[in-house]
Amino acid sequence: MAMYVCFTLLVAGLCVLPALLRTLCPYLLQDCAYILNAVRLGLRLERYKRRARFYSILDCFLDAVRKHPLKPFIHFMGETYSYSDVDRESNKVAHALQKVAGLKEGDTVALFIGNEPCFIWMWLGLAKLGCASALLNFNIRSKSLLHCFSCCGANVLILSEELCGAVQEILPALKEKSISVYVLSDACSTDGIKGISQAITQAPDQALCPSLRANVKSHSTSLYIYTSGTTGLPKAAMVTHERVWAASFIQAVSGVTSEDVFYLNLPLYHSAGFLIGFAGCIERGNTLVLRRKFSASQFWDDCRKYNVTVMQYIGETMRYLCNTPKRDNDRDHKVKIAIGNGVRVDVWNEFLKRFGNIYIRELYAATEGNIGFINYTTKVGVVGRVNFLHKKLFPHTLIKFDIEKEEPVRNADGFCVPAAPGEPGLLVGKITIKSPFVGYAGNKQQTEKKRLRDVFVKGDLYFNSGDLLRIDHENFVYFQDRVGDTFRWKGENVATTEVSDILTMVDCIEEANVYGVMVKGHEGRIGMAAVVLKEGKEFDGIDTCRVVANYLPVYARPRFIRIQSSLELTGTFKMKKVKLVEEGFDPALICDPLYFLDLVEKKYVALTQEIYNSVIAGDIKL
Ligand SMILES: *[C@@H]1O[C@H](CO)[C@@H](O)[C@H](O)[C@H]1NC(C)=O
Ligand SMILES: *[C@@H]1O[C@H](CO)[C@@H](O)[C@H](O)[C@H]1NC(C)=O
Image 1: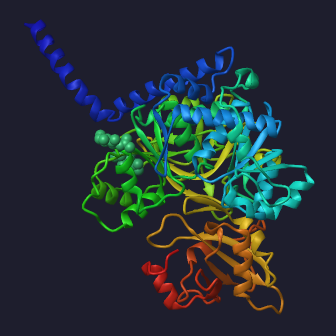
Image 2: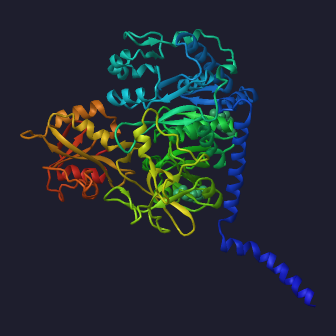
Image 3: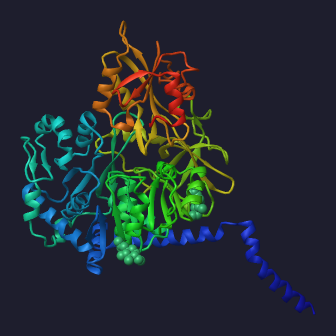
């Protein structure tokens, strides 16, 4: 009898166990699945590193070419390129560059090319020679462009034809340094820029000998990707081959397979587009649909035309898509996974309601950072989850942060203070061999600035992400805000000091304090500047517009200007921003003269209540 009771209890216990586990640890299964997946990928990377010759993402591409040469790799504007087409094109590029530019293993080449297939075979061709590529943002000009080119140490610049004008501006400086400049066209009328298309067309398409890249190791630099830093001009983050692999795994972690079709409409010069998108497609061996530029009106037509199953997004993507006029065929598509970051819960819900059920894989990562999160559970609104393994492999903490002073809070002993659960804090990741911070090319000072020392004990070393996050009681991670001197607009980071440097080049402006302000109905923050005029000068809206348009990409141009008689400084002589950000740009509330950048008139005009109302109502496009 007793045994029978025991037995029933046991059976009953076993029956309720799963239910009990689900209540007590609702995310256990999802945690386990994620951890298993992560361990498998980690072991794979270890294997690649241990091989006699390091197995890079290029080798993975070459294996894919052998396995399915005829499978479409890239769809672009109605053209389809198979794996073997892309392989042959990149062979030609490599042979031509070897012959014409004398490139060899260890050289660095800067690519100044838009989102087009050519970008991809240029990169593959360079990888075949064992060269690193610097991916220049094709929106930047003049001082920024020259700076970005110079800091990666490249001695060759390759550009697409439509960017010739931008390079002409900096050509004298390039000539001085004996930089070779090649344009992807047959010939170029500008002295100092050589056409290279003919050499590529005429080059043989046979494979290149792997011995040309025999010394490429997991820790060699594969790419330079530019990030807008907290201060000054963009910085070139060094991306190692190991890092390329790690980022390429994000598709795998998100459940993407080799059968999927991936829609890539983000710029290839950013890590999201290049590493998660393009490199991820090589890792999965699937097909990618490449677009020059995101277009909300053509988005779903493209998805239908190419049977797209996976899309990539930034916060703005979802909002732009939701803002398009409703159509009967809104749900007629095969997209099932979306990978990206920056989506807001309200927009996401609207998106789902309208376009059908799509798994969103929200993630948090920085190009140069040593810590990342991915939303692998079914919880809405989070960028990820901290679990045991993740915390062990990538030790990180949120620390209390003083927003006014823009620095971490330190206690009486001079150490940082962990944020309480649920409290926003600055994300810092311990720098270890497994989670390194390689730093920025040719910029020791900026590299050092991202390092935080003596965080919890004397002599420890952390990477300062510059981002405020929040981790709740259940270990879910939420993105809060970016701190300090950058803000995001239209998916691009804007460095405020870079913008103020340009503003102070304007004749009438003495000093400028740049920040981002929120506008209802928009993701991110739009640029605004508080400026002090030179003695006896009037604000010149035409000249200011001319300088700004000349030197800054569209997304970085301040749309609002506020004239002040002096700029407020903090105790540590930094410019005060918090109050200005809060005050925004409402002429009814601000007594200082306000100006608005009118894109049609091409000048800054006085910001009237009427303009303000139109901006808020969305009648003026920002
Ligand atoms: C998309 O799928 C349909 C039916 O499954 C097929 O007929 C068509 O060829 C596919 N289109 C492309 C571009 O692969
Ligand atoms: C996280 O993923 C789940 C499942 O795919 C999804 O339902 C949820 O909306 C996501 N949350 C956010 C912000 O991404």
